[in-house]
Every structure is written in structure tokens, then in C-alpha cells.
Figure: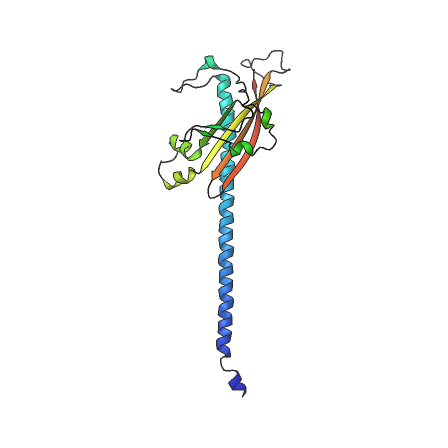
Length: 219
């Protein structure tokens, strides 16, 4: 009788083990997929952060070039046009519209970069300049990448944007005969600007990294 009752037990046990192994396999696939997705997001964030740093550098470079003389279309520095740029008149209020410098869209209205800075007094905010650049095209125009490659296409999903506001007079301490100081090394001998920069990734979901810096230039 016992032998008759045990008939088919091995089959049932095999099916249970097969089901358990199947569930474990599915769980491992899900865990691996989520881990891969997490790694991709982390990688995209890191790259977006580096591009945000580049946005700050480009904004600071703009101010530096203006202070010693901007370049003309032939790459010749126009020292006679050296200036410390002023804020533009506020546009009741400014909505964050930025000039698209190197891609087809004429302007970026209501930029998410501008909106990502929560401490800005938007109705009163005045800016010197506001520009948006496509990172992939920026590199290809610089002959750093080859236009049309898969890598270049991926980089076209990245953008950097910056806008600058003039803060006002600030202390500037410097040494050297080429530095003009009004009264020794003390006093409000500099002009302060705040540079806002963003790295933007326009993938399946948009990712924005926002940074800011303050730069003081000698008068």
C-alpha cells in the first residue's frame, strides 16, 4: 500500500523544484536588469554633472573674454571693445528664454535650467547673457568627434546652458603692474558676477544638474 501511495511523488517533486528554479531565475533577471538600469542612470548623471561644470567654465570664459576684449569672426581679439558687461533690462519677468547657439531651434523658452534654481527672485532677476548649446554638436564643430558616429548621436542628447547676472562692486585683491588698482590693494576694485550653469540630458527622461559660481573681475 505504501508503495502505491508513493507513485508519482518524484514527478511532483521535480515540478516543484522546476518551479522554484524558474522563480529564482526570473528574480535574478529582474535584479540584474534593475542593477543595469541603475548603473546607466548613475553614468548619465555623472556625465551630466561634468557637462554642468563645462557650462560654468563657458560662462566664466565669456566674462573673461569680454573683460579683455571679445574675439571677432576671424578669431582676432578686439581689445578696444574690452568691457565689464551690464545686465540687460528685465523682461517683466524674464521667463528663462535662452539663445540656442549651435542648433536649429532659435531660442529655448522657459528653460528648465532657469527654473531649476529655486532661490532666484524671478520678477526682479536681470541677466547679462543666456545661452543654450548642444553638447554633441559643440564637440563635432570642434573636430573632437566625428559627425554621424553612434557616439556623436548619443552626445546630441546632452546640452549645456548658462546665464549670468551682474551682482555689483566687490573687493578685488591682486598684485602685479598689469593690474589696475584705484587705491593700493583695498576697496571695491572689482566687479562681481554670478554664473548659473546646467548640464541637461534629454533621454527617455530629462535629467538636469545645476551649478553656480561667483567670479570677480578687476575694474
